[in-house]
Length: 133
Image 1 (cartoon, one colour):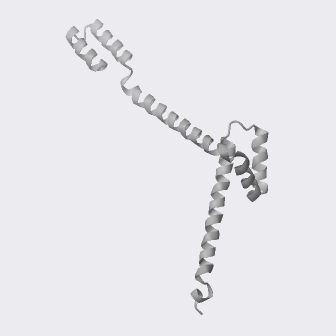
Image 2 (spheres, helix red, strand yellow; image 1 turned 45 degrees about the vertical axis):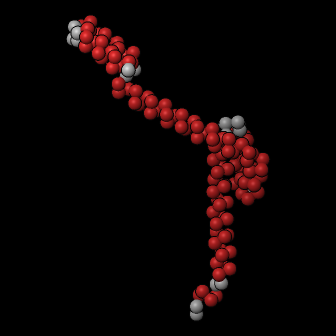
Image 3 (cartoon, helix red, strand yellow; image 1 turned 90 degrees about the vertical axis):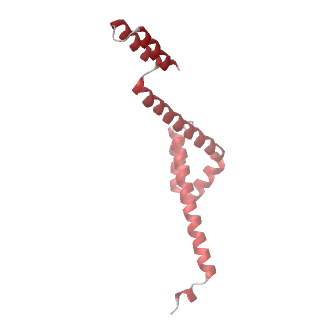
Protein backbone atom coordinates (compact mmCIF):
# COMPACT_ATOMS: atom_id res chain seq x y z
CA UNK A 1 0.00 0.00 0.00
CA UNK A 2 1.53 3.28 -1.13
CA UNK A 3 0.25 6.29 0.79
CA UNK A 4 1.25 8.89 -1.81
CA UNK A 5 -0.86 7.10 -4.40
CA UNK A 6 -3.96 7.34 -2.19
CA UNK A 7 -3.42 11.03 -1.37
CA UNK A 8 -2.97 13.04 -4.59
CA UNK A 9 -1.01 16.28 -4.87
CA UNK A 10 -4.17 18.35 -5.28
CA UNK A 11 -5.53 16.87 -2.05
CA UNK A 12 -2.32 17.81 -0.24
CA UNK A 13 -2.56 21.32 -1.67
CA UNK A 14 -6.15 21.72 -0.42
CA UNK A 15 -5.19 20.42 3.02
CA UNK A 16 -2.30 22.88 3.32
CA UNK A 17 -4.51 25.72 2.10
CA UNK A 18 -7.26 24.97 4.66
CA UNK A 19 -4.72 24.71 7.48
CA UNK A 20 -3.21 28.05 6.40
CA UNK A 21 -6.63 29.73 6.28
CA UNK A 22 -7.55 28.29 9.68
CA UNK A 23 -4.34 29.62 11.27
CA UNK A 24 -4.89 32.97 9.56
CA UNK A 25 -8.40 33.13 11.02
CA UNK A 26 -7.11 32.28 14.53
CA UNK A 27 -4.58 35.12 14.27
CA UNK A 28 -7.35 37.49 13.15
CA UNK A 29 -9.51 36.35 16.08
CA UNK A 30 -6.76 37.20 18.58
CA UNK A 31 -6.13 40.55 16.87
CA UNK A 32 -9.83 41.41 17.19
CA UNK A 33 -9.91 40.41 20.87
CA UNK A 34 -6.75 42.46 21.49
CA UNK A 35 -8.27 45.44 19.70
CA UNK A 36 -11.44 45.20 21.78
CA UNK A 37 -9.40 45.34 25.00
CA UNK A 38 -7.09 48.09 23.70
CA UNK A 39 -9.85 50.44 22.51
CA UNK A 40 -10.34 53.28 24.99
CA UNK A 41 -13.44 54.63 23.26
CA UNK A 42 -15.48 51.49 24.00
CA UNK A 43 -17.13 51.28 27.38
CA UNK A 44 -17.42 48.14 29.47
CA UNK A 45 -20.76 47.19 27.92
CA UNK A 46 -19.46 47.61 24.39
CA UNK A 47 -16.38 45.52 25.10
CA UNK A 48 -18.47 42.82 26.73
CA UNK A 49 -20.92 42.79 23.83
CA UNK A 50 -18.20 42.45 21.20
CA UNK A 51 -16.37 39.76 23.17
CA UNK A 52 -19.54 37.72 23.71
CA UNK A 53 -20.40 38.07 20.00
CA UNK A 54 -16.88 37.06 18.92
CA UNK A 55 -16.69 34.11 21.33
CA UNK A 56 -20.21 32.72 20.82
CA UNK A 57 -20.34 33.15 17.03
CA UNK A 58 -16.63 33.31 16.14
CA UNK A 59 -16.67 33.43 12.34
CA UNK A 60 -19.57 35.84 12.04
CA UNK A 61 -18.40 37.88 15.05
CA UNK A 62 -14.91 38.43 13.65
CA UNK A 63 -16.18 39.34 10.19
CA UNK A 64 -18.79 41.75 11.54
CA UNK A 65 -16.21 43.35 13.84
CA UNK A 66 -13.77 43.82 10.98
CA UNK A 67 -16.49 45.33 8.80
CA UNK A 68 -17.82 47.61 11.54
CA UNK A 69 -14.61 48.68 13.29
CA UNK A 70 -11.80 47.46 11.05
CA UNK A 71 -10.93 50.93 9.76
CA UNK A 72 -9.94 52.08 13.25
CA UNK A 73 -7.97 48.94 14.10
CA UNK A 74 -4.88 50.17 12.29
CA UNK A 75 -5.12 53.63 13.83
CA UNK A 76 -5.44 52.15 17.32
CA UNK A 77 -2.49 49.85 16.67
CA UNK A 78 -0.32 52.78 15.52
CA UNK A 79 -1.41 54.86 18.52
CA UNK A 80 -0.57 52.00 20.87
CA UNK A 81 2.85 51.47 19.23
CA UNK A 82 3.64 55.20 19.50
CA UNK A 83 2.65 55.20 23.18
CA UNK A 84 4.91 52.20 23.83
CA UNK A 85 7.79 53.89 21.98
CA UNK A 86 7.26 57.13 23.91
CA UNK A 87 7.24 55.24 27.22
CA UNK A 88 10.44 53.45 26.23
CA UNK A 89 12.12 56.70 25.16
CA UNK A 90 11.10 58.37 28.43
CA UNK A 91 12.47 55.43 30.39
CA UNK A 92 15.78 55.55 28.52
CA UNK A 93 16.10 59.31 29.02
CA UNK A 94 15.26 59.01 32.70
CA UNK A 95 17.63 56.10 33.26
CA UNK A 96 20.49 57.62 31.28
CA UNK A 97 20.03 61.00 32.93
CA UNK A 98 20.08 59.77 36.55
CA UNK A 99 23.76 58.79 36.54
CA UNK A 100 25.24 62.18 35.76
CA UNK A 101 22.41 64.54 36.71
CA UNK A 102 21.30 67.56 34.78
CA UNK A 103 23.59 70.42 33.84
CA UNK A 104 22.07 72.61 36.55
CA UNK A 105 22.73 69.95 39.21
CA UNK A 106 26.33 69.54 38.07
CA UNK A 107 26.91 73.30 38.08
CA UNK A 108 25.40 73.55 41.56
CA UNK A 109 27.77 70.85 42.82
CA UNK A 110 30.71 72.65 41.23
CA UNK A 111 29.67 75.90 42.89
CA UNK A 112 29.49 74.18 46.27
CA UNK A 113 32.94 72.67 45.75
CA UNK A 114 34.36 76.07 44.82
CA UNK A 115 32.66 77.70 47.82
CA UNK A 116 34.18 75.08 50.16
CA UNK A 117 37.59 75.63 48.60
CA UNK A 118 37.91 72.11 47.21
CA UNK A 119 38.63 73.44 43.71
CA UNK A 120 40.16 76.67 42.44
CA UNK A 121 38.50 79.23 40.20
CA UNK A 122 40.39 78.02 37.12
CA UNK A 123 39.39 74.39 37.80
CA UNK A 124 35.81 75.57 38.24
CA UNK A 125 35.89 77.38 34.89
CA UNK A 126 37.34 74.33 33.08
CA UNK A 127 34.77 71.98 34.60
CA UNK A 128 31.97 74.43 33.81
CA UNK A 129 33.06 74.59 30.16
CA UNK A 130 33.07 70.80 29.94
CA UNK A 131 29.54 70.61 31.34
CA UNK A 132 28.16 73.33 29.07
CA UNK A 133 29.81 72.03 25.89
